[in-house]
Length: 404
Ligand code: GLA
Image (tube, rainbow, N blue to C red; front, side, top):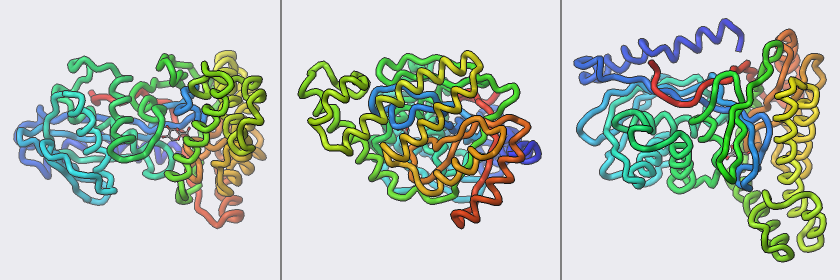
């Protein structure tokens, strides 16, 4: 995003503008402006640690300054209704009769209500308007952001701690909405990043213990740039679930020799190689990606803390090659973006981010080289793929909450 469009994006999210838009539509908001609250939840980009979260491994996501905001007025009728300011689309449901999945965006809200209610939490109906700067369906976790924003809107009072919930527990309840209501068997990374992100930092999350800590990013002279392939995420859900099964198959094969192995987190390269002939070649490759990727996350943290971006760039390149060749979740479009970026002087690292099969790449770029990267992507990518890319400079942001 250029600085010009960042200001424009800020306007879309402006809290007073959202309050006014809600008051225009909802008499309750007009009558009692002080009852209105604005909640927000960010998207995320993962720096490294891909397809490791559901293997109880390590991830290093960053919550970003592309986000979803809801202006909310609570009601006493147990009904939830949200209008999208972008196109006026409106959807809702009753909290006492949460409907079946409808394959629409409201599922993420209804699923979150279902998950929170099932936990025995006190929820309240509301009317809301929604504004977003987070591109949907681009692999930047717009679904996790919608779940987290919905959770903050549904809880009454609007503060998880008042309900005895910490931010990690809230993330897990939102993950349950995604896994059991929406039906996508995703790991915890996206919801954890949207819930627990910290400005200026990435989050190192151990998906086994759920221990997490902020890793400050050395971004004075560098920026995080996201390039969107603009391509549909073909086969993502089915292939994603297939990868999970392949990892489970690898665990069973290794566990036959060593019962202490409960997940790929328990496996190092020696153990994996020792079990090589107990599994087919593809299963071995999947497991090899996960085992090496976990090591790369920990190496990347050490390098970031030492300000050693060259090492981070090397790890990005290894991660991308592994996702392309061993895990097979990249796409020609993602590979093209990585190749184009890698050839631009000043681009320190480039790799696909998120589940794959389309979506975005993440790049660490010298601030002086951002325009050069944008230009290279905007000319070379359409020529190579016929697609229309988008390039965003993003800043690490805080996790979900109420906008003061
Ligand atoms: C998606 C999932 C995450 C994670 C990534 C791959 O974003 O939602 O849980 O598995 O893919 O790292």
